[in-house]
Length: 326
Image (cartoon, rainbow, N blue to C red; front, side, top):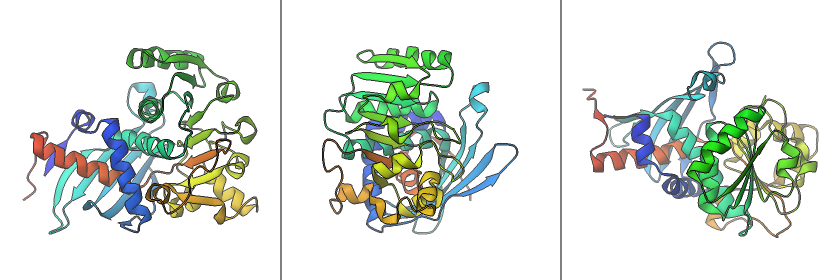
């Protein structure tokens, strides 16, 4: 078995590659080529949680499980909020062939999924990006959005002005050609933005339907359990709504669950899974004025496809530590 560290994963999985890998995985999912039990969440003290995400895929032919800890207070002490391990198995004999850091893998594949959706749904000329949140996902979402659209202006919003300003200072060094601004007013930041990404840990909405204008594409990413809702039901209702995986959406997206429960809309309001759009079996954006919403929950197929890629690259390049289990 090969063991791959966070540093190994960072070197093996660049954002541009991850976007293409995740795109292929989403097509496989929507074509029925994956087995994806819903994420299981277990409390492990206070606000901390352990998530278990098993899955299997036919292309690439692999299966495995991600064990990821969500510790919301970690950033204050210099750690990522997501810690954990991905274990990959080979399908012929069921042997564990790789274990790898799940924190960086999760961060990259999540942003890559938003990149896939943005490439498929946002207007081709989308150049003004608003990012709500200043954590690790904000960093990777900036990279993903810049990889798929001609971004020229980035508006960063955080709960604390100093954190948003610090984020912008670091981002300017990595993206010197872009114009940045920092603030705490979400409504002002999204006014006129072409792409909006919400990447917060908020349990209540930070983005409202009344604030989003025609033609905007929204990636709602941060809320992955029903008790958290970054966006309100009005935004979900007024948008063309796209899912990564319908079963996850209907079980874990709090604002969608609430909208269906109250009769605001039904399950048929979901236009498509993003894999269906990519495969050409369902429409994506139908006009320049349409608001498109990609409601990201994150699914094991994204982790599996990226993990399999890292494993094969590590084998080819002699990266990682061999840890025989027999």
